Amino acid sequence: MTADTLAAPRSPQSGNVRKKGLNVEKWGWVFMRVSGVLLLVLIFGHLFTNLMVGDGISALDFAFVAGKLASPFWQVWDFLMLVLAFIHGTNGMRTIVIDYVTNAKVRKVLVVALVTVCALMILLGTLVIFTFDPCIPNLSDGSIVAEVCNAR
Image (cartoon, rainbow, N blue to C red; front, side, top):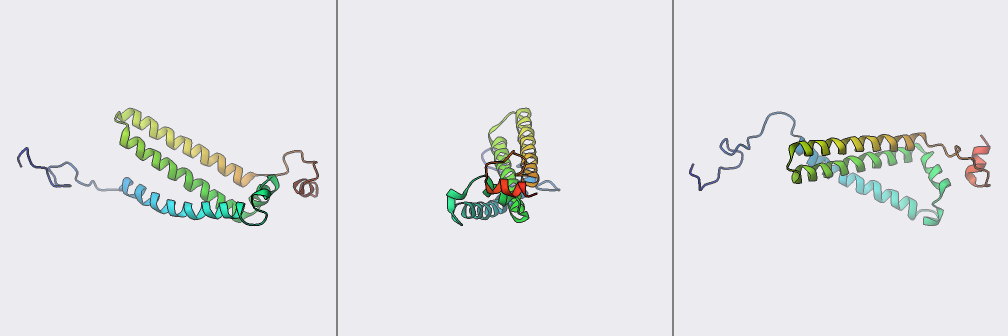
């Protein structure tokens, strides 16, 4: 092969031979497509339910959120939205870091920071979704939430 010609992709001369084992980049690509479609369904379902059904946006208050988070269906819905959105966003940011950060040590620090923040935010969001108790604030304002909490 002369210096003026390029090696064929994935040929032994080009150094791009596929290694055996798990192809993380391929599965990251597949995850982005699948999670993107699922997120569209989850987000538009969330928006439709919150903004269009019932009294619309004027019904959004603490009692509305408390009612939604009391339902196991909406807990799972919000949990899936939380997890998929954070992992989808973190994977996108990881791709940007890998593409544009040339220093290997800085790239590794940034990717570890992204994954750490993602895991922490998923943990905190999960705690909020599954341990939310509307009766913790001292409610005596005559609202529906106060009536339900006082009836316990």
